Length: 247
Image (cartoon, rainbow, N blue to C red; front, side, top):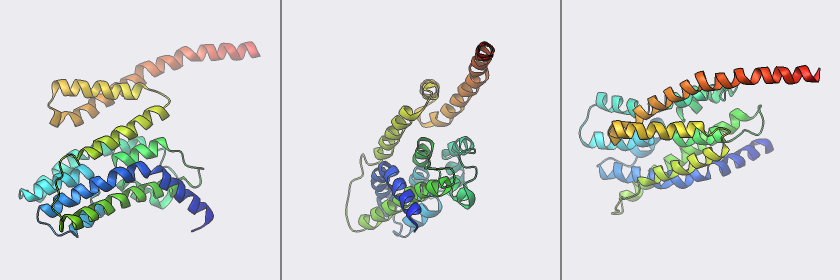
């Protein structure tokens, strides 16, 4: 590894430390559940490598234990992870020019990795593909490591798991606060909170996620169309006037 790559890796390692602290216990909880459902520990790393969807993997364990078929599993996983399509669309510009790692960056786009990629700036344009890759692969490795530890320890220990699933929620709250402080505009956060409250009042807590995303997207589209455009229109004459004064 060259000195530049080592520096990038060290920077990515520091950046992903909060995810490490969250993914290890949560991955262990998944491993415990999978082993407790009667599956060999080897399925934990296999699912974490090739599926890599936290909530989807937890639900997969419940579905498999209940004897659900592949169709039910595929549809449920698709609906749960549908929000990732919005993540990908918002990162099209950021992922431009990242090279061969682009496909893996799209695959490894979890909630937490998305939060890091949108709040962390690459050292320079030429190395951003490698820097983003290090962040994604480190987060992925934390999840795999946690699931393996959980599955192996679950096979030899009798543990209670109450409360461990809250780790993911706590981790996402911390990352959201970091995004809030790093963002230039607070409006997307207010739109998200408003969409969440509206969905919670109209729909059940179990079904509010997708409706929140849909309502929040509509609010942001309306904001971009009517508010931002009006601001630009009202600002242009002033800028033109200022330039005229300077001339």
